[in-house]
Length: 520
Image (cartoon, rainbow, N blue to C red; front, side):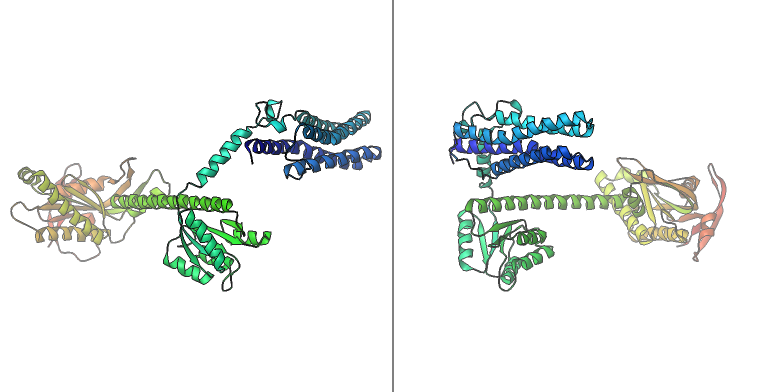
C-alpha cells in the first residue's frame, strides 16, 4: 500500500468512527421516543417516528459498512466518489431531520415536554452528523496539506500514524532472541516453524507430541512455547494445563497454534492460560510480531521476579536485623502496625553484670584487642542468655543488662536469671588467661518494671523503674566473681540454690536491703 493509500484508508476509518457515535445515538433516542409515544397512546405520531427509525437504520448500516470496509466505494475513490458518499449519508439524515421537526411541532402543540426534550437531543445529533458529512473533502488527496476536515475538532494526523506504525513494526522485530519450544505432531509444520524462527535468530527445540514436550521442558529452560492443539497422545490444552499447574513452568508464555478457527477453541485456550492464539497457515509478519511480544512480556516478568526476590531477600535481612536487636514479640507487634509499644510488668527479674577494674585493663590494651575481647565476652553472654531464655536488653559500655519475665511473662523468671548469672561467671573462669582476664560483678533484683520501644531510626527496647536501679546498685556494691541477689529475688526462686546471707547493704536512694551471694 502506498503512503497516499494508507493515509486515505486511515482517514476513512476515522471518518466512519466519528460518524458512528451520533448515528447510534439517533437510533437510541428514536427507540426511547417510540416507547413514550406508545405509553401515552399518541398513535398519530407513531408513523413519523417509524420513518425516523427506518432512516436511522439505513444510516447506521451505511456507516457500519464503511467501518468494516464493505462499502461499495472503489479504493481509487476521487472527488466524484466523495460526492456520492456525501449524498448517500445525507439522504437518511435529511429524512431524520425532516420527520423529527414535524414530531417536535406536534409535541409542542400537545405540551408533551418529555417528547420535546428527547426530540431536540435527536435533532442535535443529526445536526452534528450533517456537519461532519458536509465537511468531507480531500479523501482522494490525503497526502495534501488540506487534510480531510474543515473543522479542527475532527483532525487526525494520518501521516504521523503511518510513521508510528512503521516504527512499531521495526522495533518489534529488533528485540532480543529467545529459546523456543515448538510442539507439533506434523513434521512439515515443525520444520517450517523451526526454519522461520532460526532465520529470526532464535534457538529452537522441537517436540513431536505432548509427552515429548513435557520431557523437553524438564531438560531445558525455555522462553516461549508454540503449542499445537490437535495431537494424538495428549492434546495441546492438556499440555497447557500441565504447564500452568507446575510452579517451574507456569511463567513460560504459551502461544497456541491450530487450524481450528472456532471461538470456543480460542476461549478454552485463553482460559487455560495461553498468552495468544495463532491460526494455521501463519502470516509470517504476524507470527514474528506475536513471538516478539510474548518474549518481551517474558523478559519483563523475569525482571519483576528478580526484583521481587531481591525485595524478599532485603525483607528477610531487615527482619533478621530486627530480631537481633529486639525481642520476637516486639518485632511482631511493630510489623503489625503498633506505633507506641509500652507495657507494665508486675514481676520481672533484672540482671546487671559489670567488669571489675575495666579502666586499667583498657588503658593497657590496643583498641582493636580491647574490642575483640569485649566482643568475645558479650557474644558468649548473648549465647548463654538465649540458652536460658533470658532477654538481653543492652550493653552499656563494659556493663551487660538482661531481664526475664518480659515481654513474655514466665513463672520461673528468677531461676532463669540466676542460672544465667552463674553460667556467665563459670564461662569467665573457664576462659581466664592471666592477670588481664575480665572479672565481673553481678547484681540481680526482682520487681515491677515498665518496658517499651523507643526511637524511630534506631529502635531500642528498654526497661525502666526502681527495680532496674536496685539491680544496678546491687551489682556496683557486689563482690568480684560473685552474684549478689536481693531478698525479693530469693523469695521468687522456685529451685533450690545455695545462698550465703550477706550483711545488710545500704543502697543509695533505697535504704538498707537484705542480700545474698549465690555459691558457685
